[in-house]
Image 1 (cartoon, chains in turn green, purple, cyan, yellow):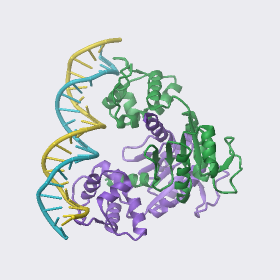
Image 2 (cartoon, rainbow over the protein chains, first blue to last red):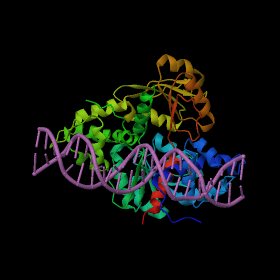
Image 3 (cartoon, rainbow over the protein chains, first blue to last red):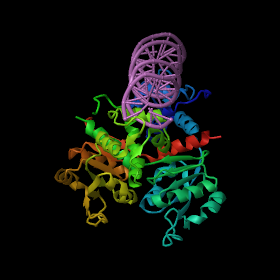
Image 4 (cartoon, chains in turn orange, purple, brown, green):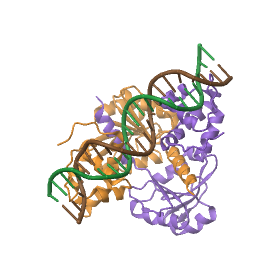
Length: 211
Length: 211
DNA sequence: GCCTGTGAATCCATTCACAGCT
DNA sequence: AGCTGTGAATGGATTCACAGGC
């Protein structure tokens, strides 16, 4: 039923957002939703929701709405989050620990299978989720052994590039980077940056425009 | 020199990104940069950079480039990050602690002036940055006393809405929310959500499209 | 009557290409 | 010669508006 049409980037960004309220609704025993209601929950235009979902092949029911189970299934299929992804993390200060314990990662199929740090005091420590902290030189052998697919970097900016190079060298093709530096990467690899200062800048801008 | 034209949202998102490399260059003693070079550093199109910067009033020098000091000054003025912003944070588990110690916040003028938690074991504890953890019922009086402008929420999802309501009730107009729930807000208030699962979903999608 | 699916219209953003200044 | 600033052209994304099925 899926059309072979290119799905716009903007749509991809939004459907990941639709997922959470849909999962909440399922838990509440709701099985059908209209575009108007989903739009309202996600603060977007209803026509936008319908257009977004129509890229998935139009399985809504006219006069009724969308089956939430189907929606979740299709969205996950499109996003490739219908399977497990193996993550390795480098840098186990507060931010690293926070991510390790982030419940939603696990729920969505993102599993940390290894943790690395360069601090001798941390190496060998047992983490709450059952992993033992490894030295960063183990990144390559362990990444390959365990089949890590995504590297998460929460180290200091000084170490971030070194760690990234190790991930790339181990054949990892995607990095989620929380360190505030620009990571140089091979052409075949992806880096997604998360920068809270930029987020705050945007919020401050919007706030300063209000009234 | 600033034109009175509306600056596109997409431009705002990008200029916050230009800031960091520019600040790095200043530190290296570089004072002038061309749109080509800045574009390369930020992985965008050079014409894009010129168009973005032209909204600020065209103070580049033809044949030469842009004065980096001026650029930083103008960008900060536009983003309203040319001043200090006072933040209050609720929820002092790992994520909260990580944010409190995030060096870049301080550097960019974002200062935490109060910290709140509901856990009796945490209340009264002294934090590394010199604050003492307060019970969440103190949010309203302290926010007003200290002039908190932005509330940061890193509590569990269960408490997030309660805390948000307290921030709103104290007259705070902007919230940065790390908790994976949708926060209901008065019309006059802003909520900016940060959701790592969504970020990972997008990365996983891009990764699955590669090759 | 209600809600989806979608062409058409509109709006916004990016990129091109070159005139204009230093 | 080199690089900015900007109209014009292109390309995407959003919204409208309504035909079509339940």
